[in-house]
Length: 75
Image (tube, rainbow, N blue to C red; front, top):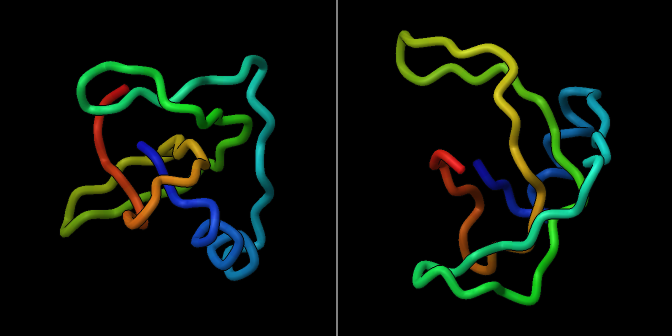
């Protein structure tokens, strides 16, 4: 799961949580599997609830994902 870097600051302030540094940088892949020129260096951990389903400690990678606020997908 990816979350836009401009949105994550608001979330972290509101929920009083901190960024977590990744042990190793990750590169974003485009839909056609080409490597983008963007790297991911941090993540946040959130408790995420969708409808009545709850999944604890969802890891969300922080990146500039252009016009999207979040992308929910398995990586």
